[in-house]
Amino acid sequence: MNIVLLGAPGAGKGTQAQKLVADYGIAHISTGDLLRAAVKAATPLGLKAKKYMDAGELVPDQLVIDLVKERLGADDAQKGFILDGFPRNTVQAVTLDSELSDMGRELDCALLVDVAAEVIVNRLSSRRTCRDCGYTGTAADATCPKCGGEMYQRDDDKAETIQNRLDVYEKSTSPLIEYYRGQGILKSVDGDRPVDEVYTDVKEALNL
Ligand code: AP5
Image 1: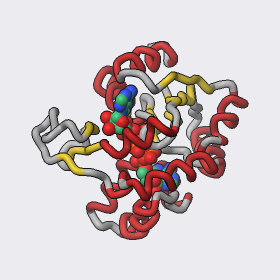
Image 2: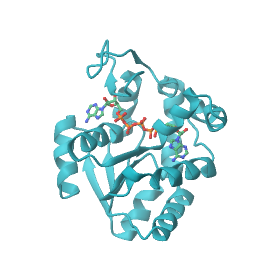
Image 3: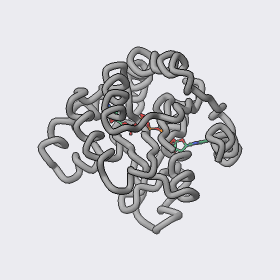
Image 4: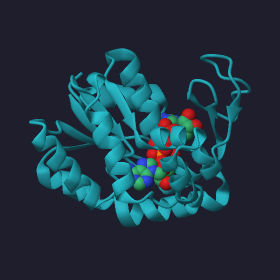
């Protein structure tokens, strides 16, 4: 199954993807995670990407497209994938369609995790992430409940950056909802409910 997860920053895309990975072993391709790993390792890509990420702006398309192309070619993505955070604009969506077509593959579903902007600001302000295993939790997690690692706040989860990320989402990413509706593969779940209730709807939407 080849899935794109759509939704505003903090809608819960990563949270739902982690659950799908745990239950079904589908390859999780998060461009945010890939870019943060590149920043941490101070690779040439990471050095270029950091200033855009810290400002809540999109990293230039070609950098992200190259990253995704390479990841889609990896062994674990051959049986299916969850793209989380990609595509982020129409250029990326059109490029993805063309890449998949070249590979003889296609998207099965673009799943929108739908959450209002007011909810998002609270969620992102209190999000904490594990430095060691990448687990996503909240400020209530003093240490990582999965591995005991240190929880930290992402640089782009500071109040001043959150609003810009939401603006970028509205302008550049939300048009993809109509793009995928037009392809007949858009599904949507209400993401403003407890994680497990959202997950039940996610599985139903994906026929899992
Ligand atoms: P990225 O990492 O993709 O960030 P994002 O899209 O802004 O998404 P988030 O990771 O912030 O949110 P999420 O929806 O995964 O929510 P989560 O599950 O964590 O991108 C970061 C940056 O990288 C971008 O700004 C850009 O610079 C760059 N980038 C990435 N991809 C790019 C691309 N394709 N092109 C160009 N640039 C790119 O949940 C959030 C919080 O809410 C957590 O604390 C969680 O515990 C909590 N939560 C989740 N679900 C629920 C629920 N149902 N109820 C209550 N709380 C919940």
